[in-house]
Length: 221
Image (cartoon, rainbow, N blue to C red; front, top):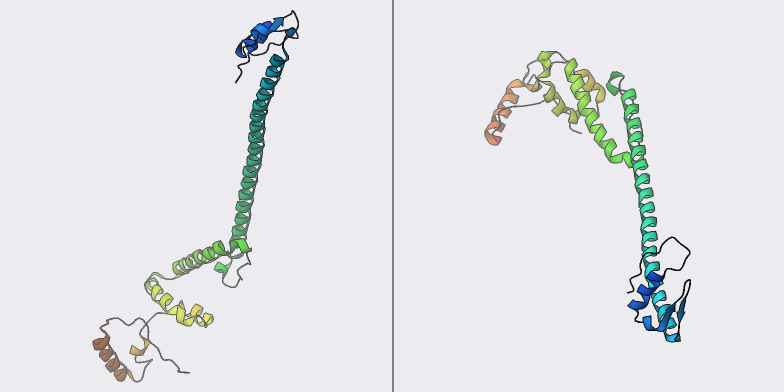
C-alpha cells in the first residue's frame, strides 16, 4: 500500500508529496521535479504510478461504499424504530380507549344488563383476561353490598352458582336470601328428613366426609 501524505488546500504543485510517493515506488531516479509538474523518463514508471493509483482508488471506493451503506442502514433502522414506537403508542392509545369504554358501560349497576362490547381480533387474549378481572371485581362489589352476617356464606353460594348458570334470575334473587346449604336437612323443606339423615350417615361412613355444602331436591330428566 502507498502511504500518501495529506494534500494541502492549494492549487500549486506539492513537491514534497510527489517525492514521497516516488520514493515509496522506487522511481525517484526516473523522475525530474519541476516547479509545477513531475516529469517521468521511462513509460514503465508511469504505468507503475497508474497501477498504484487504480489500486488506491479501489480501496477508497470500498471505504466510501462501507460508509454509505452504513449510513443507509442506519437511516432504515432509525425509520423502523420510529415506526415501532408509533405503533406501540397507537396500540396503547387503542387499548386505553377500549378500557375507558368498558368503564363507562359497566359503571351502571355493575354491568348487569349490559352486553360486553365486541373487541378487535388483536384484543382477544387481553379481552378474555379483562372479563375474568371484571367478574372478580363485580363479585367483590356485590359482596360488599351484603350484610356482614351473610358474607360468610357468599362463597358457598358462588360454589353452587355454576350449577345455576342457566337460571340467572334465580341466582340474582337468591344472593340476598339466607344461605342454608343443606336444605334437605330442614324439616320445612324435606318431609322425609329421617330417611335423608340415614342416607347421609351411610355416605359419611363410606366416603369419609364431614360437611355438606349444598343439598336440594332435583328432578331427573
